[in-house]
Length: 574
Image (cartoon, rainbow, N blue to C red; front, side, top):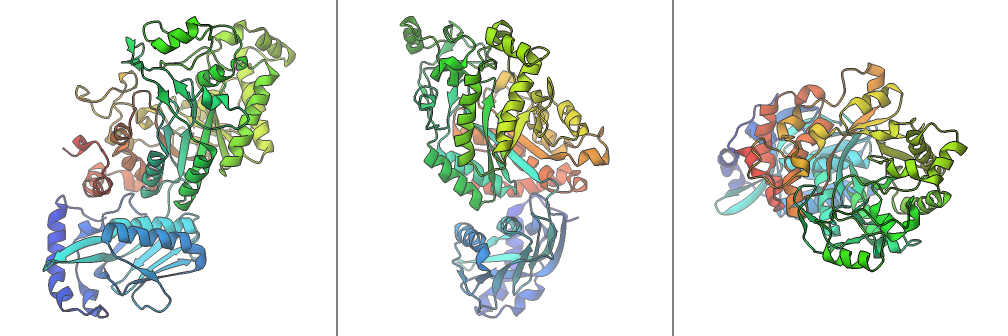
């Protein structure tokens, strides 16, 4: 195991002393003298930690003679590498087959893992091999962390220390969720979120697009979803129940063209996007747009009189019954599971969604669906009777299984929160275990695929430190979920057998945004917790036992935040 030092600047200074005489006397094509240079171990800092790494003597110098050699199928990765080196090292590199001082990208069956890669850095060449372009991409992300810029005699030089890496991820699913239903984030920030996923060698962006407080995706068949459902007239101030409304209209939505743009952007970074269209609960915005989706369309939306906005008061006084929710919490006005029109509506919605997202998964929520209205609804009670169901929980299972059959018929699979276990699990569903690990254990033992995302410690909307006085408002004042909690949590429950463990596809952290209203606030809540999560998701279990080692590497890795002007939680480094 490599030993890491705390003072990064002293490392660079020592490296400069080692290289100064060599570089000042070296011609652009003479690299032999760099073969025996000894580099301080701190320059090999990589997060997430590679599976195997062997350090060597020497450095590879990036300069105007350096080129890239790759086959045409890796053109995306070549472009990404060029852009990265220009961005962080101000080095312009061209693609050619003639250079002897090259970075070589090769697709090879020698690498067996789908997302694995090998990286061999010598003083005169860098060779990257991978089974797929995904592996090539992750090798480029590793290179990003190894590139070092040094200044000698007022001139800048860029070097990469020699080493050999064999690497592949522990989990196939490595995800982050962003809730854009409560607060709308523009396309620019969504792309930045995707960039962070890619930086951390994660591969899944779970995009939460619908909520009681906002509908964020354009559905051409149902334009009122965005004309009405994408906007609320105010937001409660303070923890639920709040004391007053801010009386500020909030909203926005992503057009289908913007969705396509984001999907294409993510694909170039090997990030798949899983859209979530939550059902049958969390649908206040859809019901405000199309009241027939409710069990009781003529009943006014239940609102807290203390926090209802002035504009909404005027609308409701003038006869509007259904409005977009302005407070947080779980609402009783959910989709009516007794009307065939509800099923048809969401089949039409999902048809458009599935055309926009190439992911094999569609997330349909299934969480926190109160059954109060169903117990009183004649349509729901008739459906229970007609289908021979035992109560409202089985009605929810009936609803989920209906939607699963529709999604399966269209060649895709569903993911749902662990409440979809209640009343009988949909046969092909993947379960996201969020209320702890119990749901994940149950689903894995039933042979279902599972993604572990327990709220302790993988909810990044919770406090991240014990001293919360100076921290921004968080959901319910919950937490803390510290960086150490995230890093030291083992996502494979000990209750599972070796065979059952195979059903755990991977892990995900979630950023719910009830109180996270700006990109800067979002950045603060996810960083550096996301970095800790990435190492658990990628690195072998035995390599994530030393939290102190991780912190030393994190102190260097944070330069990635600073280069992007991100608002990370600096107190973690105090």
